[in-house]
Length: 190
Image 1 (cartoon, rainbow, N blue to C red):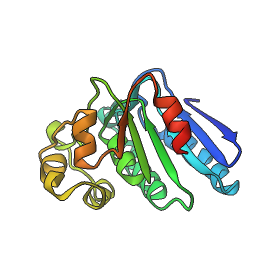
Image 2 (cartoon, rainbow, N blue to C red; image 1 turned 30 degrees about the vertical axis):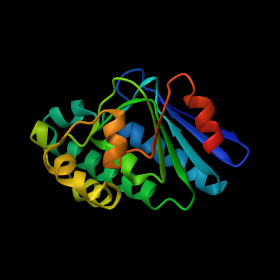
Image 3 (spheres, rainbow, N blue to C red; image 1 turned 90 degrees about the vertical axis):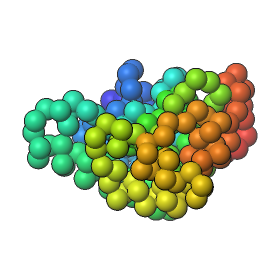
Image 4 (tube, rainbow, N blue to C red; image 1 turned 120 degrees about the vertical axis):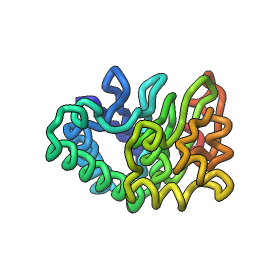
């Protein structure tokens, strides 16, 4: 399992680390939903942490490239349902963005309540159109809701890739903190 869930008082800390790109595979999506069931049952706030260097690079592209259209469609549908669940979660969802955050990773980011990124040479963005894919409605609507109006076209349609600082300006992040102090800062914020 690429997820670990720990409870610290009334805060659930969900860490996603598949050792690679933190892809949302069908198994990862199922595991996320199971973790969210537990968090919701305990009425806890959720802090979601990626692995060092990568919050998430989006869907598991191996499933999409497999040629099994039914499996790919099912994964995308499940990913959309998970994004909606994050967007409407009944308790606060805070993301500690520990590195790159692209495609579905950025969709999940705009669905969260609070987003804290770290300084560094990291990329953020909804890059679907740049790789000849469509941004599904489950990503488009939260992006329109969350992103600053001046940055919507470039971020959603033109697939602009952002640094942490420009991601904050665009609305993907609420704050950018120093890498060596992010954990202290993040703990304080929750």
